[in-house]
Length: 117
Image (cartoon, rainbow, N blue to C red):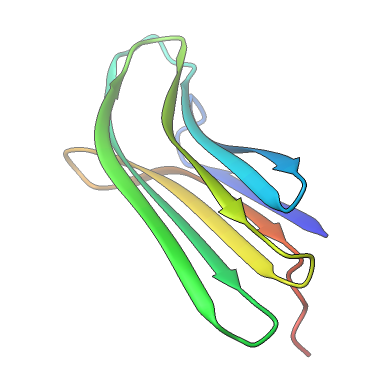
């Protein structure tokens, strides 16, 4: 089961997690999309959390500052994660204004997440 959640405080800046499943691997590409007429100075934070059937947790964290021209898309980072069919994977991407640190947009992606009762 794959779940997506997207929130965008400024509709003209969008965080997006693209993914491709290849055998037991998931290739994840994080991008920012600037639909505005303005040049933007932003920061990003990507967090990937994998939990296996034994309950062991591993995480991947990537962050950085970047500039994005008007009407453009920018690749922020890319990672490949090995995942078994029984593993849970939660990925989060946050875009923040570089100066104010205000959250601009976020996206999430979840694989095999079991609902807790």
